[in-house]
Picture (tube, rainbow, N blue to C red):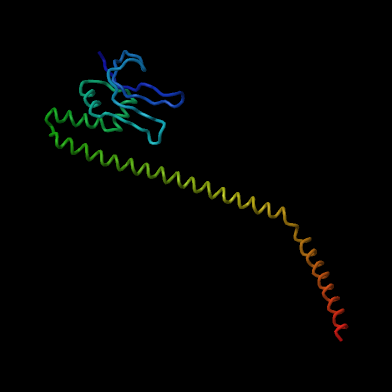
Length: 185
């Protein structure tokens, strides 16, 4: 019996999630399986993988063959490296302590890369958000200036109206002072 480690689809239309399962190669994709060893959600950024790596290594050592997509997920999670190191321990090339130390070293480096990647993504999103806000402020400023320009009269008419009013007020004040001065004498 050929055993495969593969993905079984679930979830709704256009928003799929996958179970990582160990199944007989002759079983249908979403049909019977031997054991579920994890889940894979490609809809998040970065993709979310929840995997029981000990069970995956155990099945790989028993001879289960991963499909191409499952192989890339297992590689990304370090299961294939752990299997490789475990084969070295079984053959006597290295000790279990050395294998565990190498795997922990790889895991630390991987976590550093993932955190830097997520930090870069968040910084990029913040920069895009700030650029959109700046563009919106600029367009709102231009719109406000256009409304102010539309509501104010042109420059040619504006000075004449206040000048005429100033002359009328000045002449009215002058007449009032002239009337008062002769009466005061």
